[in-house]
Length: 225
Image 1 (cartoon, rainbow, N blue to C red):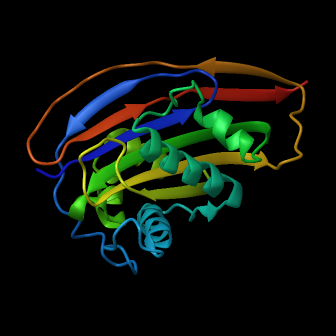
Image 2 (spheres, rainbow, N blue to C red):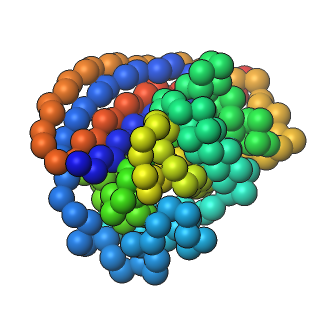
Image 3 (cartoon, one colour):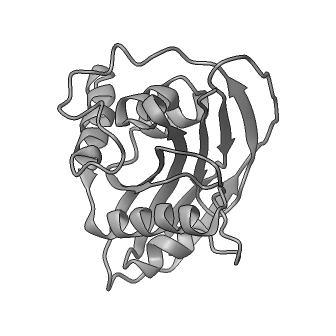
């Protein structure tokens, strides 16, 4: 039985976790973008994923994401790392977080900001950009990241292969999202910040395709001193 597994993180300082499992149908409505049905190893897979995500945002009256070379690098490296070391989580075996990865790639936030991450893997027909985006849009936490109006930049990484052994025709996807201004040389202004977070957990298994959502959410509001 083919499986696709999805996890989500939307983070700003304080983590929250909510897990959900659900079934989704074939992505018939997500076929307007070129290369939406290609294999994850295809050179057009990244552009197709961006097109599909921006299509969803346009349908909800949101601005398209701008692709960031820094976030692309972080996402691409992490997708490859999960396949190579056979793990699937927002935190690497060595304890590295999304924030560690995007900062190492050159992203440095300035002022108020937010950041988030969706990760996914699938095999066969469930490893195409259309199947992955369709799965995210059928999972509340992943959908919330894609349709978060505060996020303006995205990085997309796709690695051929699955984050576990014994899977043929797999594809592992990472999308990193950020808001606020940032640059490699940016420095944070002195700020007074407040964080709020809440958490919940639920699990409802169904047949066919399993989607596991891992959501990390926090809010940070900063006022310059």
